[in-house]
Length: 437
Ligand code: FES
Ligand SMILES: [Fe+2]
Image 1 (spheres, rainbow, N blue to C red):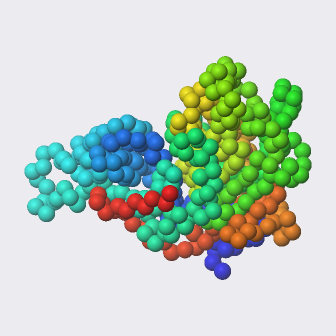
Image 2: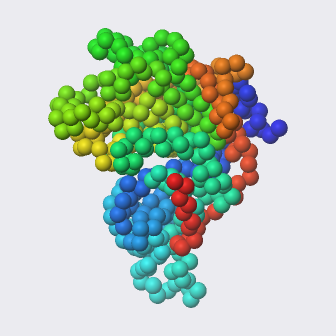
Image 3: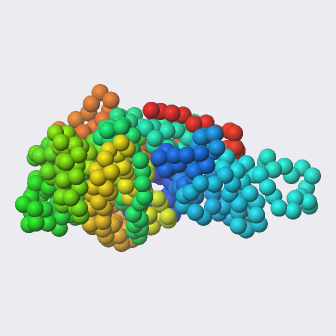
């Protein structure tokens, strides 16, 4: 048994996994380096020469599409004296010039110009001084992942049963394609795993989001999204699942008894946009409107992508006790504009009004975790209970308030953290990109 084994036990975890800077530093290598990490969506770099800023743990990246359409994840770190090279969040550029001393790189990462080149040693070659990059990329339905671990399993293997669930989210779009648009940003003073615990936690909505449930009752007569958590959520058929490799799934759909559209809370412009769609789509209007509301699933792709509602949320650790969350609106390509406007308004609903409940509680948890003498966090609900079912593909499914998904991701976390991973970077031309779907 290693030291980490003692921190993650079947029914409880030690506070230090949320508070210890050494654990955090190891996570930045073994998890946010050794595992497949979500980086961006292809729709954010649709055309040649497009780029987007991203991160892999603490490593700033520039995701680029070169002039031939190839994808790259360049470390946003000058090969000269380490300055960030690109400060823009997105745009189109063939070249990136470092603002410190002017070294200039192509969007494939090659060093193409060094000012005043005289004076460098005779054996200084531009070819050896390009931007380092993520050596292994993979895409699944347009989602771009990267790992620094050449021995990691294939992306398809890593995703496992989460793959078909990503398909289900993407295939709500009539074209079978999604487009990731702009984001809302939030930050909280707490460890990144507090957000991860919460993503598989069907016990908290009844309490943490009480005001939403009450609003649904008082203003809208109940039967709205989240109303199914009003009381006894385990009697609704909603369930949580441990998908393996740290991925988790919460399915809220069994708790709905009307269409997604009928259970959506009002958002600005709802009636006007709905009337436009009804006029344009006639008998198909109900099906078209059904694409607008959230998916009523929470699909968490370890370690940093939460697919929920009709948006993506990315989890960016900043330090052991600080985390950034970005909520990216996801449009359904091929759906009428009115549907995508509604999707955007709806993607603002829970993240704006519900996420603050969660973030406040993450900060309260981090504050409680600071008490060194009280060491353990309980995650035992559902442990050994008959209602946990295991399917042939290893998916463990249980009533929605059970904490099995959290115990599952922490087992995967422990496995990664206990492994010997060798991380590497690549130079331009050495990158592999696998298409998993
Ligand atoms: S640090 Fe980039 S050119 Fe000097
Ligand atoms: Fe929540």
